[in-house]
Amino acid sequence: MTELLTAAQMRILENRAIESGAVSGLELMERAGRGVVEAIFEEWPDLKTASHRAVVLCGPGNNGGDGFVVARLLKDWGWEVEVFFYGIVEKLSAEAKINFDRWGAENPIRQLGFPILNAADADGFWESAFGVSETRLVIDALFGIGLSRPLTNLRPILELCDLYSTFPDLMPTRFVAIDLPSGLQTECGAPLSDAPDGHIPWGLFQADLTVSFQSAKMGHYLGSGPAFCGRVVIKDIGLGTYAAKESVTNPVSCTVVPSKDTQTDLVHLTQKPNALGKGSHAHKFSHGHAVLATGPAAKTGAARLAARGALRVGAGLVTLASPTDALSENAAQITAIMLRTVDTAKDLAALLSDDRISSVCIGPGFARETAAGGLDFSHTREMVKAVLMADKKTVLDADALSAFQDVPEHLFEALHPNCVLTPHEGEFRRLFPDIHAKLTSRDYTQADYSKVGATRAAAQRSGCVVLFKGADTVIAAPDGKAVINSAQYDRAAPWLATAGSGDVLAGFITGLLARGFDPLQAASDAAWLHVACALSFGPGLIAEDLPEQVPAVFRDLGF
Image 1 (cartoon, one colour):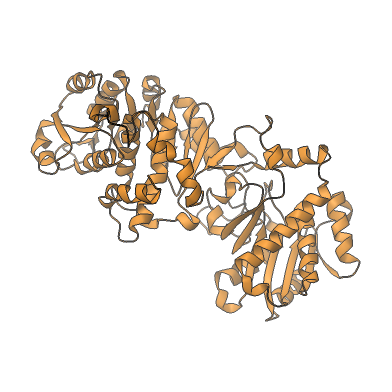
Image 2 (tube, rainbow, N blue to C red):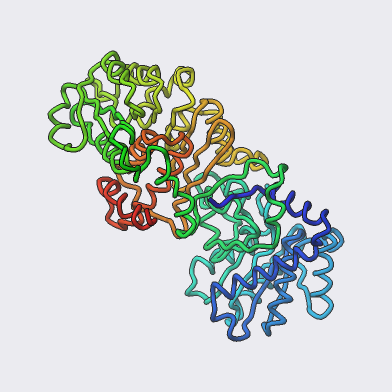
């Protein structure tokens, strides 16, 4: 797993390295600048073979210092480089001031009005960056990690970059951000824009390549981060020795690792005590027995999708708990999956009293319709309570969550640590309205209320694992451990937005729970596998295809 760090944690590592005497702040800045240039030439080899022209925007902090290093290194490579500075020279850090002076000793620095740009500033930048056809790079070294306010004053310049990045035919210019595109919040990936709600955010740098250091940051993978970062490259600046110290707490694991590492990360899928590949003494019950409760007639498909997912990930037995009116409908669609009649909460409790049953899922397509066409959640609530009383490893999805939207405290009182909740944003908002309100408040000083912070808070309140769905799915446990499963960048799978795909995810989790995985591991692995199956199949995917891709994904992992 790749660990993500907050801005505060990154500063701790840098300070710790400097205080140890092993490296100076000036050397770290030099390493960062070299890393940016290396990443540029690795991304676009054509830029390495001849001299070109670059425009570098340097800000008032150490991000700007990195920018001066990049400008110097490109100039040494034979490039023509023009630097714009936004800030007050006297307030630069010692390291940034040294690099400011190194550049300024032999090269002009175009000062931008600080803090208020005027029309001449914007016109001068436009003429240098886009009025010259030879410009091949625009580098954003304005603001890096830790920004918490909109860059309203820089909007004219950032909007020009956005325009030329969005319409590359206007000019073949590449856009590179150092650490994060300026205007993006580090912990939550929110655009730090003062655009009205519902409007496209303005005042952000749109990058083709973002180069960060030592570790990716949460903003690269949450919220709007992927939309503005382009491709993210991480360069090692030698802080790994200091990363394991106790003061760097609660790093976030992110499952966006290359496939060669993924095999290592997921090898436990073959090594758990009751996992796939068990020796000659294994039998179906040693692989776990999963039960999935179905809804009424004409609403059973969701649970069958989940059941197929549970079976494919290796549960030894899978049973559908079906109401009488749906028995024939379910029986006509299943073969390896078993079927039991369950009409009432008492029936369900009796079924789950079997000690050999190891996990249960309830919610997909479960609620009954009223005569008026609405949903009657009273039956669902009783069935959910019966499941929770059985004290099995449990997945609550879809209608099992919506049934408690008016009384979420009744659900929280009944939950136990072996549960996994799988809300999408609407369900999350209804179950955790105050947490969701903070998440969407645009109060960017509340770093804890990134999607990671919100999911952690929800897990702590509910006392169980919460999987908050999305392209930036976040899974968190009550103890604060959290995982981001990103279906973005090279793992983008937009065809997952199809009816029933979430039901299959619930089934994957249920199957892994049946096999003996703890709730956080089961939810994290299932989320990764869900995306991997979609990528394996490709465009044209429908939910039924997802479980059938599991064998191919396992083979690709070398299992």
